[in-house]
Length: 142
Image (cartoon, rainbow, N blue to C red; front, side):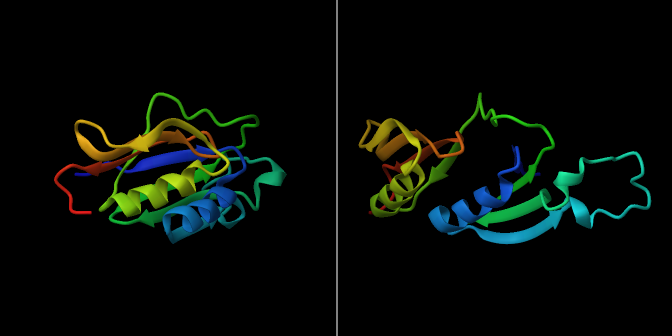
């Protein structure tokens, strides 16, 4: 068994995929739009017309981890609260690069710095308001 995060974006999923491809070198594994949903068997699932090009389901691969994501017909800001995605970077250089890329157009909560438990640790919110922690373990080579 393993857990996979599923993130819901209110109309900005495609933008988020492109952003994570650029900042985290994410690989797009799968993408399905609402307009691709077969009509047969889904008569009770009525979506607003403007949702056709929006993303019903997507999956990206970041390193060894997968994130699933989609758009929602709901309007308004996305509320990513009560959790953070954590990146275990392989080196200080990689951690610094990832932190800087995610912090661009975002908000640094705790700058990336050495701590008593890690060679480097920092917290931020990316431009979508998604909370991230970047950690380089003290036992890792850098």
